[in-house]
Image (cartoon, rainbow, N blue to C red; front, side, top):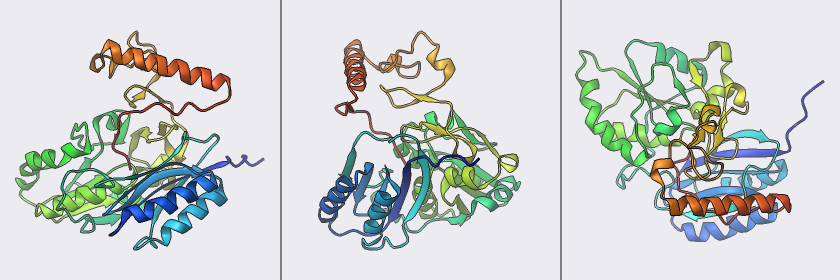
Length: 317
């Protein structure tokens, strides 16, 4: 017997293109998402669009059709998955300076490295002259990465350019120029990270097309070089091979993933703190989080969604 189709389609999308008037794009896109019952987040900047949305198949097709009609968006990159429940509480269309923030305003995000298809990725990263770099943040790398990949240990994508400039001599000091293979969750951060390396004069640069999510979806587990789970920026928290739902929960205070071991820690309080953020928050902050969690639980009992909470921004792709 075939598995039932999960009712919600989740679409992760981005496109680097030039928008001259993002305010004019925002209003009709916001209205359409509301009319279709689509929820999630879409970021608009002069450099393009980025985000993740969820809804019925028909609703997602309607919104994507609208986006593909925007300037330069006919070739919109979209990755799909399914969810049993709506993974977002509300719809947000936000105007930003960058659709993924690196803090390099003069960088051309369209001058990128060479794409490598998921099916060809193993051969590239297995090669002895390839340096593999995970461009994601430390809390993402902590729960999974490709075997042998370098972890820059960055807390934010804004830290990545400084890390590159501090470590590039390690690659350039080799007798033969190595290949630099970079990857991220869905591909968007690698568009900018490979563009950065090219702007820095490093030309043998490659990145995984579609990111980790495309690899986990398309490459059989028995052939995979991936170890662990992949953090995703929605209520699924993490996924594994075949994009199966992972084992991690989410700390509602800091938006970091929490393992079963974390949840057994005395520093973990549901909705309030986890071992990673307990020392980062004041008693006053934790009291606010506790009240927010209480209100969320009460709303759930009433069958309502409590959407008043504001969480720290995290890099997403």
